[in-house]
Length: 273
Ligand code: BT5
Image 1 (cartoon, rainbow, N blue to C red):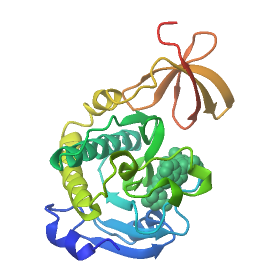
Image 2 (image 1 turned 180 degrees about the vertical axis):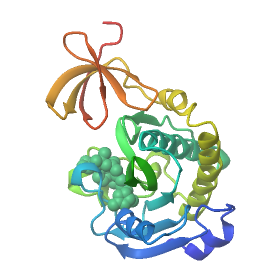
Image 3 (image 1 turned 90 degrees about the vertical axis):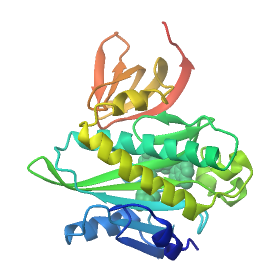
């Protein structure tokens, strides 16, 4: 069991995680935190669980995690911003998470890993999913009243412990580097980095987020299948716009932006065609 007393003592933040809820089992940390948010919980509240009975991804997909091996958490933010910023804050979370992993590996003299991003919310290693982020918001008049960022990251789960459904798709840090990740230490570092970077990104209205995110994305130029609200389409990923939406080129060479759809398949790299 992750030791929340250790986390509370070691955590060097002003706001983030100061209000910390830890559960052995919960339905979903996001659902619980959305409830707390409706009841007025303050910005920076964090909910952590060792196991979720209804952990979810987008579009009611499931998030699997073996008890006590990974990190499952949700963070409550209350940025005084419009709905358009939700996507950028999600991309910012991926950047902070990837940088925190780099830092953990560096600090512990472990081999570095090439963490890549897949739009809109995946962290990948060797094309397998290490982490997923689910942002859910409560809005009023297009303004964000509360934003719950849910993060699932595979730290110590090994392939033999994994659900059949994700056996070929998932990867964990321990699997890559061969040593157990200190979950309390990693969590504290991540929350500390999050607090610093969130403040930095917000102060500059998320201007650097897109550039920083693109540096870890290898999808540009890839021929993919895109699941748009109007059905599946072949496309080439071209860019991310300043709101964090995906720009893709359709078969006739026209550019479109994708806000809610999804890149579901990757084909060969066709950069330059
Ligand atoms: C996501 O959705 O990737 C967002 C996942 C967010 C999970 C966290 S855990 C804490 C918080 N509380 C919650 O209830 N949720 C958040 P999406 O892009 O829709 O991807 C979902 C897909 O990822 C599934 O359909 C599986 O194919 C795959 N998947 C599920 N569990 C996985 C795992 N542990 N590792 C890698 N892939 C996984």
